[in-house]
Length: 230
Ligand SMILES: O=C(O)CCC(=O)C(=O)O
Ligand SMILES: [Fe+2]
Image (cartoon, rainbow, N blue to C red):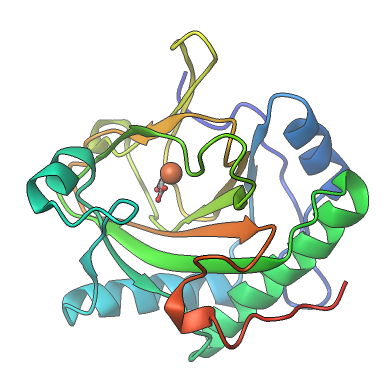
């Protein structure tokens, strides 16, 4: 199936940040472990799209790695996206980090996950790029706990590929999501195996992770993100 299985249409928040129905989101995280919602088209989303595209055109995004591996052939077999960490240096980034902070507090209040810090990067998957099936955190590592991916691609068609494919426990494909502009996917980093299928045109997103501690936090955020008051 293509498209979010549990799509909530959510009105813009009064603060200018997108508002989320946090009860629905947290019920889904506590149940299936993932949820997709559609954020309304705010200035923030448009600014983030413009910024991602500009970074790509300026060649400011660099090939992503896997863990500590520096075997480039291995990395190229696993993932082909290019990324750049957010550092809060633009209004769009600041707004997204503020949104993530609101999310962190709301999720902690409901699910008591102890989320502590957030890191995120812009990503582009150019034509032919993919990310093979993986978990964002090793089970039990309690490091990356909650994954978020915001998609920034208006008019994404079925044939454009680049779907987020989510797997169940028995290797079965549970759902495939199109990376359409404003779709936000949240899932438990240690629980939900997923992959990005081959994209046939450039595909922009912001992938982020809430952690339960500061270990290994993205260098650009190590000073800024710590500590966050409960
Ligand atoms: O872009 C996506 O749909 C998922 C990206 C991803 O899995 C990751 O960066 O870990
Ligand atoms: Fe991932």
